[in-house]
Length: 285
Image (cartoon, rainbow, N blue to C red; front, side):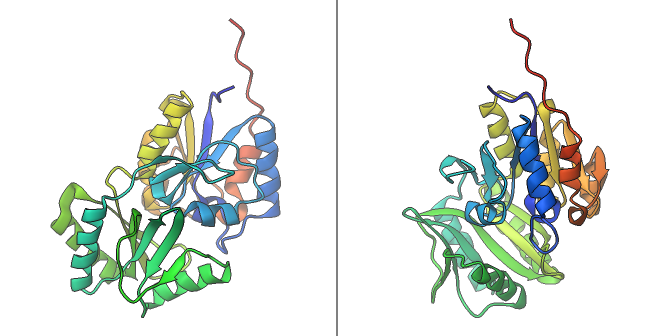
């Protein structure tokens, strides 16, 4: 039976606490909500590998959105159900031109069936922290290389810079490539002072992927409730019927929200879901 209302949460800064953890309360509460018949899934800039590792205690049953909308996947197996990737030739041009300007990204995608995150040392402080956190979790995707090149499938080019560098990079990308690439700049949740600049297919964002998921489930936008905290959640907010921000959200996200709930460290999403009753069954015709 298809759901009649769908709840979609961002992960970092929204469902996950500030130390990247999922509390025991949140895991138990969300599993209980799913068992009651509530349709609940996630939409994140993380890859499926990273999201699954952090949220393995939740029994997600519906497709999930990962890589900031580049992929919709089976939440249990990771099977790709829908993909919006970056053109390889265009990715190569961005990569080479950015390199001439002194910017070096993480190149995210697939070599055959193997997911990779390629990068070229040396790393700036934000990049080094990003890599170290993933190395501690045994992230097999990390691939240091002497020379960056585009893989068979490119999901995104991920740059990490300080505030001034990220602003300069964003402005250069928009001037050099205009609408041929999608550029998303936002503050890094776990490394203050560091900003990510993601380069992807212009259609690869949380809004596009959420529209695809709503269509798959035969839902209208007003039957979607979304939770978020950061600027890349704003496209998702524009699609959904109800928009909910956690108290720690960026100011533009709080301003765009219909409701502000307690912060990620207070398990605001889980407390909200705990108050919802089991969905009513549709009347027989």
